[in-house]
Length: 207
Image 1 (cartoon, one colour):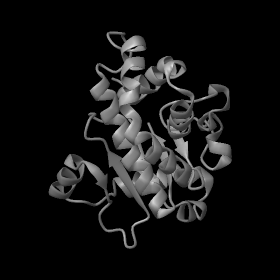
Image 2: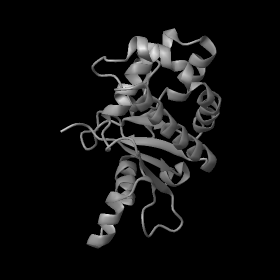
Image 3: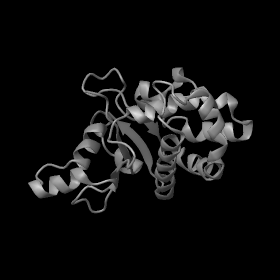
């Protein structure tokens, strides 16, 4: 069984009021609350896009379910690896913009500095906590607006990535199957960071 991604947008103020050791559990329980009847669970499980937990007033978190994946983390990992391969062939201005957008989401500029390994600087339990597997990504509220601006700049230029993608990713195992698949996923991430920045919230990827 492969690794899945549960991507959560959350109000960091609400999370700060919860002890660090309980924050992942609180998100998990908010997204899949206990006590729902079968029909409510079925509706919750089949929803796509932003999925807001029922019965939360006011709502303080939501899960994003990608339309172009089946919940697996693999497409995101493959896209990140693909960007790492092709980025040196991309003109410097667009490369820097894409780096800013993708770093910490599906790609790490410096894997040794990946904040998910330390529990995002103590905001979440560290990767060594046996009760919870390591986080898959971490984007605090202060980082989201910069990523949204980077996406706004990069979105009109995505076609410039077509040739680098063909040179470094096309027909390679472990890379996105097509340029269209790659850019469709990027556009969804663009929507995600735009909404997260609009609310002043942060993002966390739970396995």
